[in-house]
Length: 261
Image 1 (cartoon, rainbow, N blue to C red):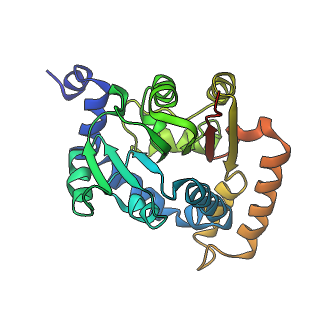
Image 2 (cartoon, rainbow, N blue to C red):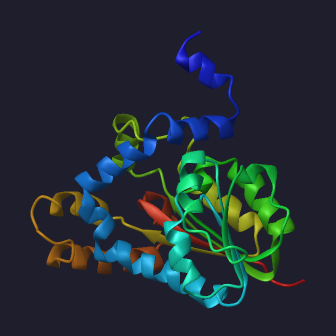
């Protein structure tokens, strides 16, 4: 039996775990990020990184917080500085959880190996993740989290990739830095979010910053340069004024609020 056939006999969660623990997907992805590092260090990217953490900071203080796709716990450590009452991380990768366990603070910040698709038994005020939903059957996962795991008045905050930009499509074809089942968000996914949740805010990230950031990496020593500062202003303006353009951006910040009934 070939490797491909063996992988097809695994569940989606098992294929995701294998991709990270055995097949080196994260390593290849990191290599591409390093190759075009100005895309990820650009003013437009850092603008929405700051917004991501600010939204979480406002919601996390003295609250119960869940991170899905916690990896080695590095982001959770940053969120812990916002003084949550309790922070839990979950990840499908056993290697990642072994690393995260080294950062645990008993009864305050804890990490568990598991598949969020099987459900979360506890309730939380804030649920967040970075580049995790597109690895999952995200529609059923989001509905389950929203209905069963998110307290009224709580928020879900995610950063997720879009997949409609031609450069992103080329990256998907040639990078070999993806798990077998992952699928970046497209327009219909955005429409589904708006149909199924009362309050959804979407902040698109990196339109002109994507090609110019790739170019800038090989021209300027720093990502904070005149070309990418201009791209940031244009991207922020386009993202705010033209909601229909969102799928053409590289990435997105998605905020879902659960309004009390």
